[in-house]
Length: 332
Image 1 (cartoon, rainbow, N blue to C red):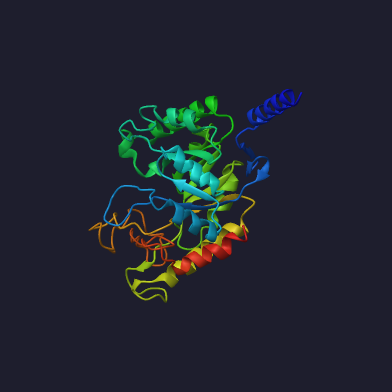
Image 2: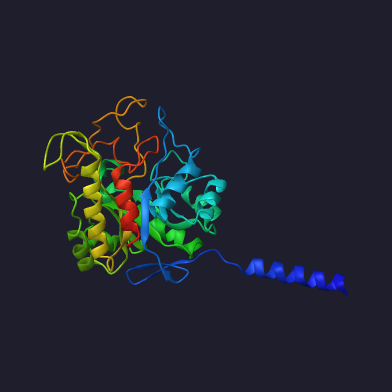
């Protein structure tokens, strides 16, 4: 009799395990919901490249996740898929979620052009670490990649979003647009559920929220926003050179704007987690420079010093902006 009872208990446990579903991410009006609860994106852009290298490495993920959790971060935004399930498992075990980005042309490696991105979606669509899928990163600044006609990109973008919807009803699809998309662009992409926007309007992005509200009722978030910690010149009360206070002040003001417009904006993926030494000059040295095009909106000097954007330095020492994020993300 006891033997039969054990078998029955085992069967019931198996049935319960099989009935457990992956987290469901849905849209309700302007809100992103996880398992029917509002989910504010307290995010960080994450592209971990060690000193002296130009390639991504997750060797320091354990330390990085602990720092993210300390800062109140709940979402990691990556620019290319994480191919290792063990890494996604570790992120999920830490209680964080990931926005997985797909590029257009990545030589056939999980990209939109080859269609191989859909293989990744099929493999990981039931993984609880996934928040949503994101297609492209400010490609509207690069018509030359699409035969000089951005409509080619928007057509490919909407088609790719539709492909994802067919196989994964449990996760929305986003794109990361450079600045505010025009209404006709939004209309070209009805299968995009969430519009991410990379926004650098000094330390005051508030105007974009009303502008978005006027053209769409879909959710939006700032897929990039922030400031670097290097002043190219003495300006606006901040000294020239490395200047953590300038970065911290800008980040505080940006996050305050997002908080004030949280009924429209679903959050932010702050750019970025740690300094990236591979972007300008010698990969073994911390170089100023590496100005990005169209960077006049970067606080407080209008110049994007590409190796100085982290809220931590490359050694994972905290900058002043880390404590700002830690304080403000408690208010989200």
